[in-house]
Length: 204
Image (cartoon, rainbow, N blue to C red; front, top):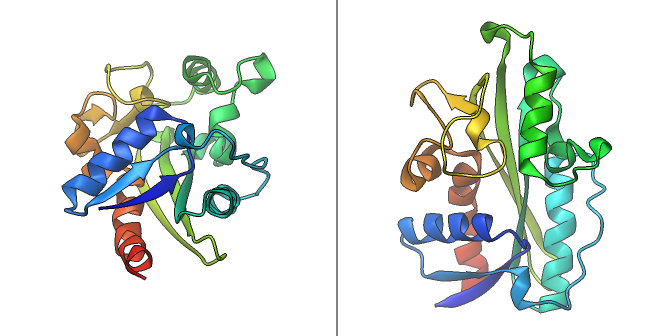
């Protein structure tokens, strides 16, 4: 079993990633930034999800000496011209609520208050970068499409999951099981594309 580093301090994300790895039959162990407190991740100042993921993955790999992956993901709402996009986690920062899920969701609902159902489409996007300590970098991306609900629903998931309604499931991403979510989610799709690349890198 080989370890690799996931450049995140988000425990929910780390668990989700390990679940997808295990379900796919790979024997990798994902470690998080909490295991490497000395690592300093530069500001995510890229203009795309992939650019931000690369920034994090390269820094984590170089400082840890391990192969590292990093993702950048967010929700892109059609009625807001793709916003919040790469600013999803910081959406309510202008209201003094940086990286606070409940406040981000409140702001999104407020902005879409008068938007009819047929115009509430959007998608989650996730870009994953894989980096070696030597500087090799690869990227993949996954997406899942849905509709922004009028109110939060469900107890599971995190982030915008309680608002993201998936028509084919007739549920929000907070109302599905972890297995259901991982099967269709943007991060699940990207991870399944990433795993063969990671396996190849770890075998070298």
